[in-house]
Length: 61
Image (cartoon, one colour):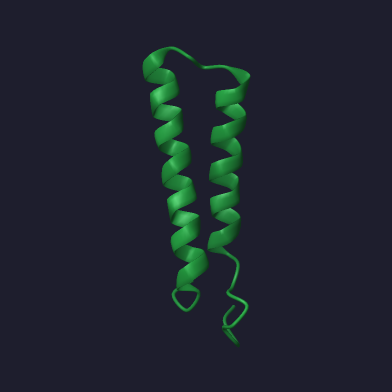
């Protein structure tokens, strides 16, 4: 994860965005299908990017 800083930072930002979206949806009482889908997609996409590697980084696992 440390050698792929570009994808790691993007993944962390996606996870943070998903958690913030979830917080505001719950706080506003607007817990709809759209809110759940947005949160889940953002968090799962961020997790996927945490385990990915950059194209220009060789040997990173």
